[in-house]
Picture 1: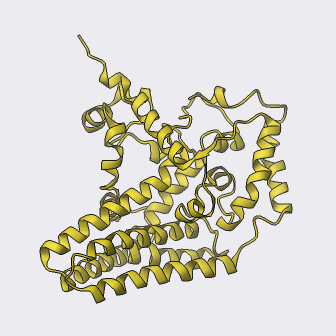
Picture 2: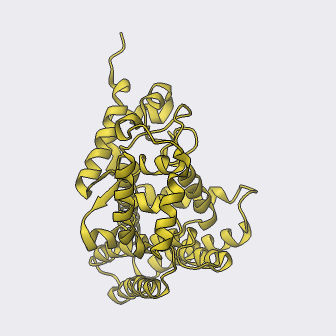
Picture 3: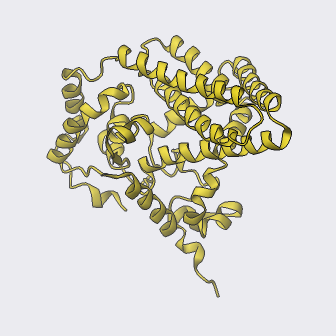
Length: 345
């Protein structure tokens, strides 16, 4: 998919398009904080998180613990989505309060470096789906464009041939990958509060493994860990992948203003309240990318304003169901891997 396929020529003074939309959103009060909503959401997620650990302790040495491992993966994912909202300043106007809360829910609760992830995610928002600047489309294991496929070497070249079929199996490793990346980030001098981040990450790992070994015999503890981390990785992957995968991949040749850069590379996912809850509001990805600090609860109300405004400009606005979004992502992965499947004489 190319940018030209999703946008007609822009009207004069294209750079002011986002400013006009932003005024409409602000006048509707959609950038205002929602303390009541977040108080309720934080309470529910905390209850799920604590309740699942309580169930783990009560069940003891039982094979039913594998079900608890799946439920705990859901709890971890919901805590991670709260960390995402904290990083964007959606919950509190205070950066210090957001950072302290982010370190607690990110580093301590789920073992994810808040500072590392915030830096990575900020760069993604600045240049979504951009080959050179978005870390989420860097060819570390998977490849996201034909240009990357042709230049690939090593593991990405090996995996890229059949990456669409390997995508979901690879997601089972994403939970572990995030933890490894978090600890590796501690070596970076640019990471703020490295000592605090490292101490909280270490406390998480020690508490997590200690709880497993205290309640379960080693074989069951290892199986619990595998099921929990695999389900956590798949949940996160299925939450973030529908947002951009399969949408246009930008290069240095693409010169777009802020509004078009964010809208044309993002995809919304339909599905009602259940999908909205499961994906933490990220199903309204277009609105989220245009207004990252907008509280999740307001994204649904912003959607008709943004959609109608894009239609008035002739800017493509992508939206589909959850299963179709995964299908588009997988088809894109298979198509960009095509050069690697050619038989070379």
